[in-house]
Image (tube, rainbow, N blue to C red):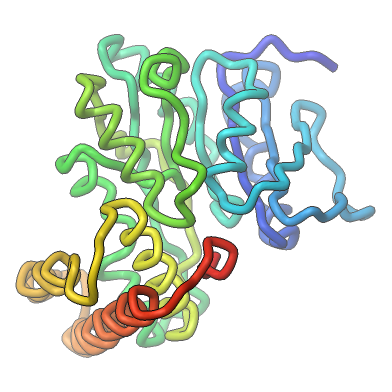
Length: 293
């Protein structure tokens, strides 16, 4: 069935069919009628659709052979039929009123080109792991991001004309492409606002290994994004905001002192991981294909 859509939801996925199932289930429970949006799933690992995965009638599965989630999102942009492009991660669960809230925010603010939605963390158990304590303290600070003119693509609404003027994501980046693109858009005068009511739930990373893997990807993306050279290039930016992070952590009244202590220890460890990764990349020859995904 061909849908005349207002929204095109773009969901890149990389070997994560298991997480995609509940993501699609939540999109099927939106208060906005299904005929008003389409879902573009962009597979990025060269895999076929599992036989036991049934796509909704308003969904299409696309395949992007070029590595990286930003290359996948760019294919989604090219294939999208909607006049508002919505970016969602495959492991996110959208609240039933998510799309409706984003629509109302755009309608109430016709001068706004981008809307960053609210990302709430979900946890495996009431007692948090050290990694989850870190995530609770520092992950997905969308309100702060918007104040700085940027947003992550786990929950982002963009009018199509913004892409027409600004261009698409930098597909050469393995990490940090969302900040690079949204900063590019806001620096050209496109207004970005935060929408508290457009809620998606994202599982907190529960292991130190998962956080370290992300820290390495972020560092690799940072080197490419800021074109940093030399062992000490960019180190000030890596460690320079530590004091601000600690001050923010101390003020968190929604966290116990034990949770804050774990978050601080993990923060220091991840800073060290980033420094080591930076040293490894600038002192050896690594091609793009070898960078962590």
